[in-house]
Amino acid sequence: MGVKIAGAPCCWGVDDPKNPYLPPWERVLYEASQAGYKGIELGPYGYIPMDIKRVRAELSKNDLNIIAGTIFNDLVSPSNLESLLHQVDDICSLITKLPLSPPEEGQKFPTPYLVIIDWGHEERDYKAGKPDEAQRLSSDAWTTMITHIRALADRAWTKYGVRSVIHPHAGGYIEFEDEIKQLLEDIPYETAGLCLDTGHLYYSKMNPYQWIQGYADRLDYIHFKDINLDIYNEVMGEHIRFFEACAKGVMCPIGQGIIDYNSIHKLLKEIGYQGYITIEQERDPRNADTSLRDVKQSVDYLKSVGY
Image 1: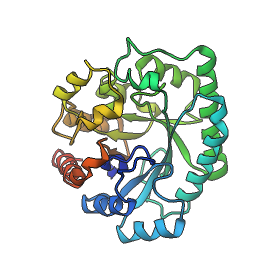
Image 2 (image 1 turned 135 degrees about the horizontal axis):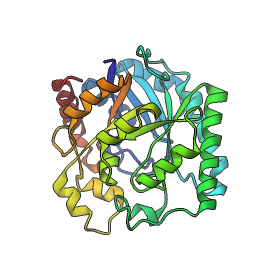
Image 3 (image 1 turned 30 degrees about the horizontal axis):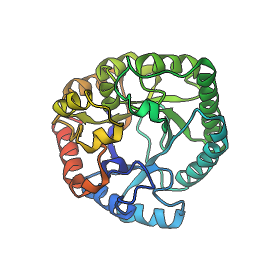
């Protein structure tokens, strides 16, 4: 099984590039290398600078490749489309000029990917993980979002040759079972693939194993994370934003939570998954001093069970 383990800056608490407590991006790359990664995501737009020479030098120093860039933004508002397309241009023009990771035999699309995530709606942020309470988009607003996703994916592919993958995310308008299924009806695989995240699926009342198994034909990329069940049960009873729950420790090192990675390992062999899986453990960046310890525990655990 040609599976490579990668990382993401969110393991160091990097989700909002405007957060004043973020660790320096150079430190994140260094610690990612220390944890044993060969690949890492770019992180949210605006964190790692759009400076090819500087970024290439740091990647080379740490023996890392960038395997994905991310649009983590409001995909719904019509007024935001121009900004989203500008982000696609900035991100894709950077990641396609950096050293490429060699593709695995059987990998559907080569890295780097453009991960597309809807985010930035307070009314849904407070209902993350609660499908029976969260409001849904109107049909018109949904159609607008789908049109935007198509435009972003088309721009990335036709202009840069970058494959887009859509990431259902807790706290956004593509989160729950009904929304993901509708997304897959509205966005053909020719336009964009799927990035399933084991932690977000579980957080939002879905079974990660069943979703990977059921949608293997749409799956280009996977995020791995784990969930502390005690903290999860606690935050499900609170009026709390998703990243506030993460700051409480709802995401834990892989192998220390509720998700069965032995079964998922066997499943990935069965479906013939090839390519990258990326470890994530969202947290408060003020707790980034324990990030290297935690991501190393996640990497060591996955290797211990055969990844």
